Every structure is written in C-alpha cells, then in structure tokens.
Image (tube, rainbow, N blue to C red):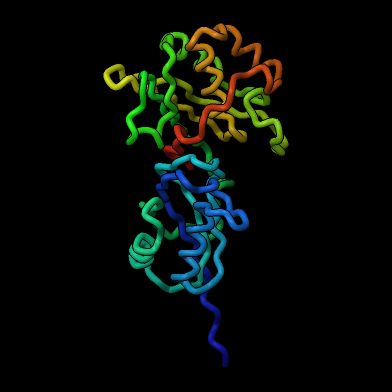
Length: 253
C-alpha cells in the first residue's frame, strides 16, 4: 500500500535584496533576477519544483528592505533549517530575514493591503562612491517646501495614468495613496520620499519623484500636479527617476 503524499505547506518569506546587477524581481530567460535566484536556491534545497510568488514586481536595479513572497512545498525540513540553508546558498546580495508557515490560502500579492516605498535623493555637488548605488544624485538646488506641497497633492484615490509607464497593461490605473511626503536630512543633504498606497503602477513611484524634482527645481509649479493627474497623459509629467534610489520598505497585510 502506497503511503499518502505529504500535504504541501505554505511558507512565507521576508526578503532583503540589493537590486544592483539584477534585472528586477520577475524571472526572465537568461537574465539574473531575484525571483530566479530564490527559485533556483529553494529547489536545490527542497529537491522539488517550487513557484515563488512575490507581493509585487520590483524594477531592474530597485532594492528591497522587506519584500514578501510565498511558496508551497512538501518538504519536511523545519523552517529554521531551511532559513539557514537559504542564507548559506543565496548570493550575498539577497538575504531571507524571516520565514514562517502560513495558512494554505495565503497569497503574498493578492492579500497585500498597503505597500510602502522609499526613494532616496542625494542633493550634493558630488556623490560619494559608496552612496552611488543607492541614491539618485541630484545636484541642482531644490526648494524643500515646494517638494512637500507637491507630494501632498497625490494623496487620495485617483487615476495615476499620467504617472504610469505608457506600455502598462494594468486594467485600472486607479490607486489609493494614503501617505506621500519627503523627509529631509539637512546635514547629509539627503532627501527621502516616502509613499504608501494600496498598489503601484509600473514606474509610478519613479515618475512621481521625477515630476516632484521638476517642481523642486522650479521647472514646474506646484499647481501643475492636479492638472497632470487630470490629464491622464504620461507626457505631461516629469522624467522617470533612476531605479537605484528606490526601496520597497514594507508590505502590510
């Protein structure tokens, strides 16, 4: 008599990564990605095919402090041993910071309620080499008051078509932004834009930052933000800020 097949467990991972040198989260043929590295490493440990599902896709070069993902496995390896095995085999630029068994129906993407992104801008004449991979170096003079006034204008449930990549396949461009503000470290000349929303469109945060910087340097008036939103026209907004300044900070469930 055949023994019954083990019942799959659903394991939730919290992951940090330095996105430099990766082609984003999603697996792509012949390209190095975060999802690809996690999948390859997990399969080498549990010795069965797995599908790693993340809370969302991050762009090439974007970093994460606490990306959430899940996968199902029939492996009996306890969570602590799996955690140690993962961090001993993953590249040094990817680390699992937490692992736990969750309900069978938990889904990292579908159950996410709010995501918090942070964008870092170094507003100095030159950029130290050790900061370069993790900030957008912007040397022009910026008006901090205008930056925060502009950021406040995107709070609420609105159509963000004007701040979405033109080729996006998203069926709805409506998102609810619950918080949008800049934090200034005047000693280090470091600006951090923090934004929380129920979801983000492709390049949405980077397009918002690029537009706010145009306001901060005086190329756009603060009052242009509502008009850009209303236009639903990507060409009305500012440039896309580089990916390397962007961090996924936390996913709330």
